Length: 175
Figure 1: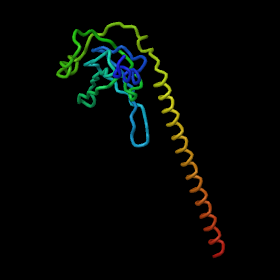
Figure 2 (figure 1 turned 90 degrees about the vertical axis):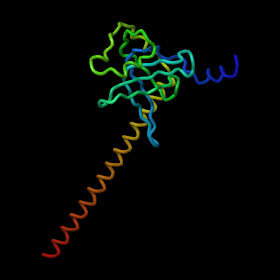
Figure 3 (figure 1 turned 30 degrees about the vertical axis):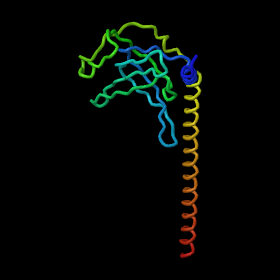
């Protein structure tokens, strides 16, 4: 085993979903914005699969968003790709479905094929733990934000009550 294979084995996920061209997939991707992290789901048609047996295994997913075609290429072994779910498998006879870019509406439909949905039952414990950790962090942040708002509202309520009491005193002194 040479050095390159050793390094690749270190970063390669233990199991990835068998994705083919023509599949409709949901890709769960970790997005970091500033100091916040969230999971974004991108659903679309796989128009290209490249280097299946390699660490650099990629898929290109295409969807139409607001009338504009959007394509994203994902490295399947990337730590930012948490999960890939195959929702539909279609009958295609090519690996690169670049002709789908020119098709719109009903012309862009592909005939579905029955498939075993258990291919999605790949459990990557590290990715699942990461997803759970993200959920917990967002829940904690939301709870802290709610607590801060509640404290701020209580302080405003106390100030309003004190102001009303002071105004009531002034009014009674003037009489």
